[in-house]
Length: 190
Image 1 (cartoon, rainbow, N blue to C red):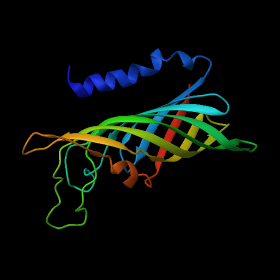
Image 2: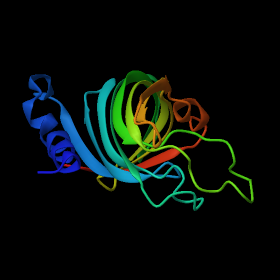
Image 3: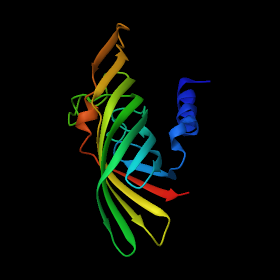
Image 4: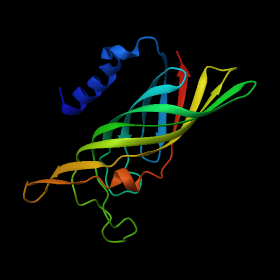
């Protein structure tokens, strides 16, 4: 079984083995962003939520610099710090922290260059802390939730050099550079 398939299988089975999920409500849906697309699961109580996201990483793909997307698994534990309830909606602001694992490209200069368009470095493993800030909107007439959020992921990136084969450990710059790019989760209650 390939490394990516084992990673995806482990990510899908992770919620089944978490003992703390008992007594929490569950919703799942899609993740959409300029960063990538994927699946999101949210396990929540009234004032906190555990958010697990498995997504692709589109860095360099949409700009035509590479044809190799990456893959990321992230987890955050968020707390609700503001809430407004209307007649047919519930709006919540939430923030929290967690972690991210992935196999991705990292930031490289030359986005607007006419000559150096291809990414020079290989994909590599990333381990990062995540900080999440979001706005969740529940609609009472439908079992649907929209979650709009921003996530920063400072961490480390480990890759091999194409020419020498040496291992290179560096700061994961995309975790900060892409923090301003919003993400939208469209989720359904189960």
